[in-house]
View 1: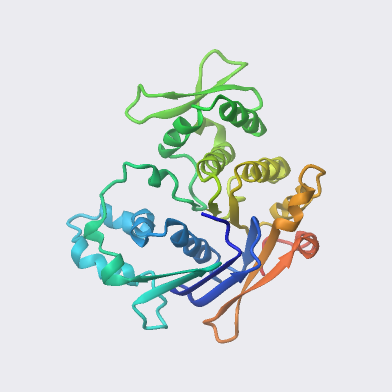
View 2: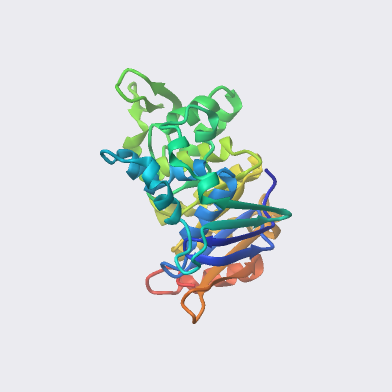
Amino acid sequence: MSHLTFFKIENFKRFESFELSNIGQFNIIVGDNNVGKTTLLEALTVHSAFDLKNYLFHSDIFQKLLQAKNANFTQKQNEVFNLFLNKDSKKDFLNIFWNSGQKTFINEKNCKLNDLPISFQNEKELKFPYIPFYKAYDEDLVDFYNQIRKDRNKKRQLIEQLKIFIPNIENIEVNTEYEKRIIEVYETISNSPHPITSYGDGANKLLRILFEIATNENEKLMVDEIETGIHFSRFEKFWEIVITAAKTFNVQLFLTTHNAECLLYFSEVLKKENLKKLQKSTRAYTLRELPDKKTVKSYLREFEEFEYIANYYRTEQNAEMRG
């Protein structure tokens, strides 16, 4: 799938109609709470999945239904689909437009939950390109790693990148002795391995992002509140690793943040000699709710203004992005 340069969605959740134009490879989304930043990432994910059934299967709403006792999926199918439609439009379908393409999703034809498998056993599950803000370690990372470790160079590169959080890391292996498979880290200073979860949210967040970048080569990846779990002292190196990885695998990034320091370090990293060329591929989009309280519009800032805005927000007392 080629990178997006234009994206528009109609009748999806918060958006009756919303569009992004002049999209780059590296896109930061900022704005007030509840303005639609996460909704935008979800809309981009529907486009990436290109199959609303695939998207719904991975959604929190559907996962809760799977866990519910006596859930009647046939009766629930229309109800679940409608939860993803704009409540003000009264339409029973949603439209997606991108570059030179268009796709319409209609309830009865495209979204029958009884047709959905209870679990996916194919590669498509691994390539679902959306990381919610709360998602760090889970057993699915083992499957990601099993793909990556087959390539010795990729494995070596991954270990080197993780040194930002685990300075003495020497090797990574999968332990299958327990009920759930776990990823273990070997360090030069210890004879025994430690589970990756013992190294904190930052290491696990970076691990997930790197795994998903590597397995979404030439496609795109959406990450909600990318700064979650990352201490500000690690932002610079964190960004350099993420941007370099996305460049290497030609992955288009769409990222939301509330944190001014995170945004500032992002712009600072792009001034480094080895990354300067990526400035022209960088965008910041501020989402604003218009006075009618229904319409949301995006305002584009390219790198020169992006850097200024980052410095401006750094002076805010709570260091949060507020449009």
